[in-house]
Image (cartoon, rainbow, N blue to C red; front, side):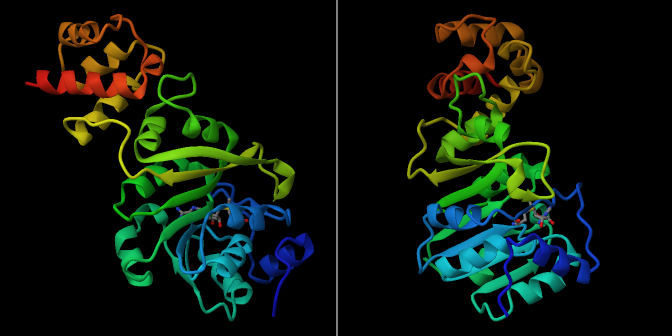
Length: 289
Ligand code: SAM
């Protein structure tokens, strides 16, 4: 049986039959605007031979769209109470696999090996639970599964940070990781009225397309990310402050590194672009004890 998963009455009936009540803590705001999920699936770049990982299917409103587009859909849902609902709404969809797990504790490489074929093009498409946007994104980028694209619904402010470039006002440590691995763009905005229940924030769908080469070469990738995190550690203070404190380097050494790159000693992290940040990381790398 096909359910209309954007019809609020149908969704409420399915949920109450399972004894489900919405959990704010789990970021449970379900899409009930019929235009949103088909648009996300269409813009995700997922092709008929591809595999797609979804995080947090809810009642499966995006999952059913992805099932039409992809060869294989793997969807990870933490909330056990949604399993009987998904059993109904995804009944007969033989290319969809539901994993009852916390995405933050899931070995994504093992999951990909279990469900996807070797060489299959892989993507992520998800309406994320907003409380874990940054850590999930870091996991997806760093997990070693070569996802070609990530199409994600996130809070609008998070979209601004993620799609910013280093050197711009909205930039942060997450911006750097995203810019290093991917090209990020905002596809469209979604207002609170498109969800049941409506969240208190506005949302945006972003797409990250993996780069074939990072935009900068650094001496040590791990050190580069440590440097970025340290530079942004105390947002209202200077980059030097975070760098000397977090990396255990002398203040003078950090000041010397900045001035050798033509940067003032009181430079703030958000004024450094990707090339300057990489050059700074390399200078500091040579100064480690
Ligand atoms: N995809 C559905 C939609 O668009 O209507 C639901 C999206 S809702 C914003 C987020 C979903 O993520 C919920 O179903 C929630 O239970 C699930 N979730 C929350 N935390 C999770 C976690 N750590 N791992 C996996 N799923 C999680």
